[in-house]
Image (tube, rainbow, N blue to C red; front, top):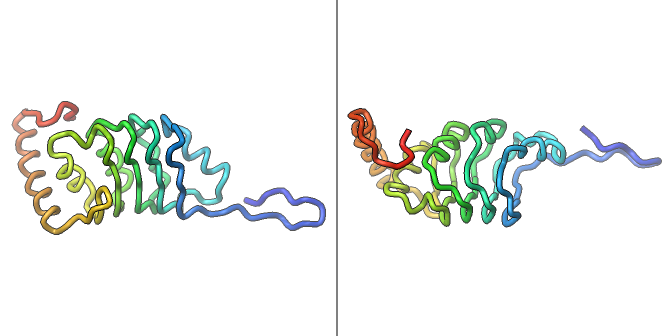
Length: 162
């Protein structure tokens, strides 16, 4: 898509975003994110790096990241995310995610938080600006096997188990 041309000038091409920083903007929901990005950018689905840190997000809508298969880095630190179901939503939509920040969210205080996040993203290389080591990955996989067995027996480990 191009911008309308002015007399005597050629039309301007819109940008295809690779990275976008919208941190510290008091954003409280992401329901219209794709529409907003589509109005400004050509091919917003090519976005690879997104900083939504320092906003007021309390949840992640189920389909909000469906249009961003190329997203490799996502900064969500300093929001108000509190449920593991938000991690599940992100993991379903962003299976190739390499780096995520979640520190400074109530979610970080939950038991087994680090294991849960690492186990949810098979390609994760960095969590909260710290490398995910092979030891971290092994620990998360072991924890996941135990967690799944516990859930299969009908016991809950987390308040927002589903």
